[in-house]
Length: 368
Image (cartoon, rainbow, N blue to C red; front, side, top):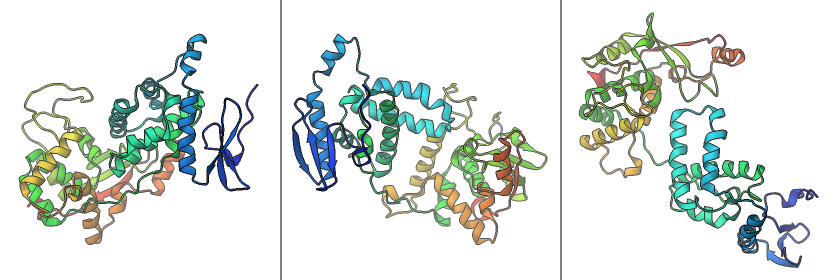
């Protein structure tokens, strides 16, 4: 017989735990004999206690599963299924998939060997506690989705991750100053200087800067398909007019290294790596480390805490600020919504309508 669905007051609660609307309290029904126990009005404590009790009463479930020829699915095992079957159709950007990989590694190390149905709120809360607010909330959001899919397949009775509370994220990283970014650029290798210049002039994200190719320069324009938005929206099909400033930056990208990418470098060892289609390509993590090294060498932002130090990502905010200060429209070049982008969405990219923008920010105070 299919069990009767839980009413609205009991939705989101572990099995055997119920909310008494009349008294405003929670009560637990012992599954062995149906006896009721009052758990008070504290929802968090009631849920945590119910999970612990359910785990205790289900300790023999592994023996039952053996008789029924069933096997419990561990979190590690289900994460493999999640990666293989659930993530690919979402067509996530590489940077997002890299983030999932990092979080999955953390989850497997701490919770991976536990059967899904035995993972409690407390176990997840203890896993999230030592993480920073941003990392914790990222991991929590992923776990909520993972357990939603697991519950839909009948692999666990509820979603313990959904009952944890997200941390409050306080933005700690500060903005670049003109003097600070100039100092960092002066200590950067040439390839990183090129990346900084392109970021300032085009106001594009780190990944899009690193994906720019020489073949994208056509008929006086630099064509950019923003990787973060090309699948989800149409704020990413840009046709950037090559102005005098941008042309000078592009010229600095041409050197004696034969590479398809505007931003490139000669590594110490020429070696093809997974995820790189050319040995000269710079990946995002290497760029982040190189920028930090240049920032440390510059000695700027002294007195700031490590978590306050701006990285390469904050150059985009600096660019938009400088465009605004110069009385120019930096929003469109950043890839924000326009009528043409809406038309792209309606046509499902069958006929892409490129949004033409002009990169005319004077970065002479940085590049000389």
